Length: 235
Length: 235
Image: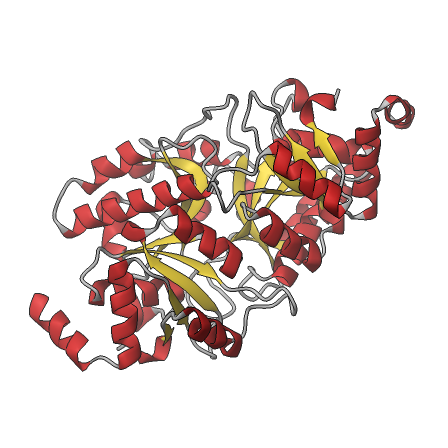
């Protein structure tokens, strides 16, 4: 797989190359899914490189939900379900759940949510240091899956649930099935040769109380020297 | 129950009275659980009064996880489980969960997390307007429980899961069992004669990357004219 990835990188647009470099260096990427979808810009980092400063940047400049996303092969290796499947199966025991589980979204496709996690060493789990530790542990588990290690044991020994970092699982068919921030950010990590794990946070607008517009995100990207990537640019 | 509550209010400290007034008027309360516990200050609003501006204030001045808390009688009326019980029961079907479910916390007591919700009219569910609508719907369901209405139907018709607002459930024994922000904020709503539903968000410190200290929260409370309540003051 090394050669096709390198070739893909060489053929990639300047903004994909900038995003891949940022991911490798632990810097933020701004990622727009597209106008026909959520039409949201997320701040994205490699999960392995998510420092306390990364968490602070996402909550102060993004303001959405800080979630960790993993490749579908990571979820399969551990045996992690989507939350809507988990809730549907738990509805036999808790009938209240049967009426509220939605396995689809208004913008198409299924919700990416799985369970929420804390690092085992967390105290409350919410501050920048603790959410960083949780996300980095998820990155470590994803790396073990890529390298053929015992990811399932590592997952159990590093993480616990419930916690303060919602986990998102890439669709089984990756970008060919779903082009959300989960799949797009994981695609960037794969192109960068990093483990398939990212941390994402939606950018919100305190003036309109809606998502931050792509135009405003582009201004912030330009001011802060951050790459802004259009989802449609990814193959 | 009306008379004892009124008497409790008359006997309450000035800071409890200020917090109760703020809750009734839809203003923010800063709530410190205590040094022997999480030692965190949360921003708290009545769920019924949670506007898009309230969400924006919590994410910009708090920075933690924006969660809705409900009284245990609301969870019972609907039949909602704690997340750790739900995950433990789902572990039969998804064995990966069995090793990671933790029904206790480092600061004592059980985690308050239940499922995460979106209002049914949400598009993505994360922006200020949509999280406000989700929290207000939870407030409406809590009001129906207090007034003897059909809360379970309303819950199903207004809300769906998974979503972007984690729900917290008050411990069965309320403050006598657990004195977390969930129980403390619900106690304030009860004293205010409001439905037992609140929205809470931890205050974080971007300088230390830890929780905001009580001293810094007190300065912010003083500058912004917000009540700061010590959990130990609640009976």
